[in-house]
Length: 146
Image (cartoon, rainbow, N blue to C red; front, side):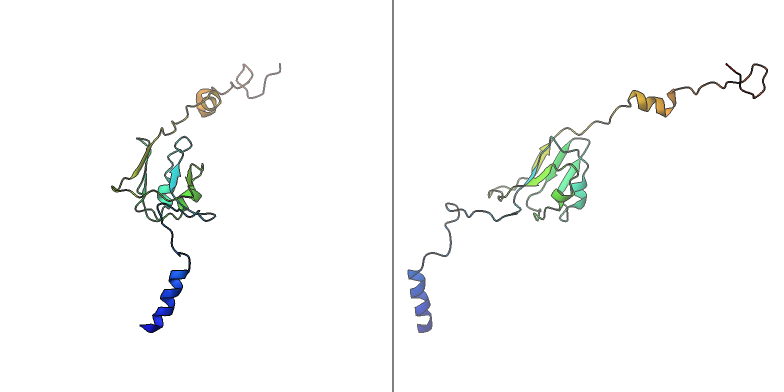
């Protein structure tokens, strides 16, 4: 017991090694991966994030336009952020606040509508008739001179 007395006395004199967390919050580190955020205006509902997610916590429904993430299953690895083709996913540099009830992150948006065929595409698809053959009126295959 006496060999710990020296350590105990040093701890009384030194400043505290811990923080009073809810009141004193440490600044996050550079490149810190915190809360996952999706910009629904940019999202095209391609579900690439759901396919690449190692914990399978993301669900994308293109028909209803919903993007669902279970933040309690997410491991915050940012693979989904790296694989998003339109960069609609990002990560804040802060953790989510503690919650009493587990609530999933459910976002709704409007999925992109399929594009209608334009005039150039309609012509290329076969609506235009091919030009008539210019043959002589006698039926021979020699072209007629104009």
